[in-house]
Length: 79
Image (cartoon, rainbow, N blue to C red; front, top):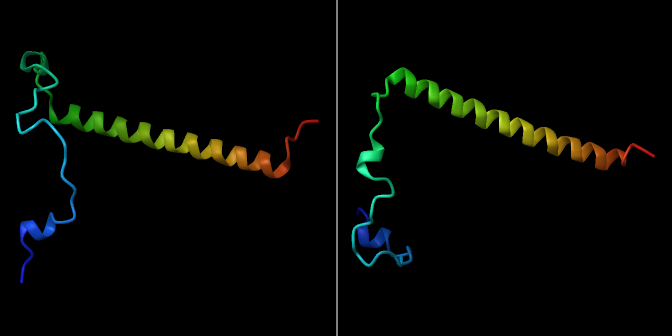
């Protein structure tokens, strides 16, 4: 027997929201259009830069945590 939608949503709490009215767009349609069409290579480049930036941030965070742990383990190091 397959579960019904009501069975799946039984544990999900109700949301207070906009009262059933459509949400207003956060950006107007005229501002959403760009001057030039975005090519697939532009999308790929943007995604690659985003991934590299996220990885660099994760590395920097990990390095800071390791440095703090080393300093805590070894003491302040400077007397």
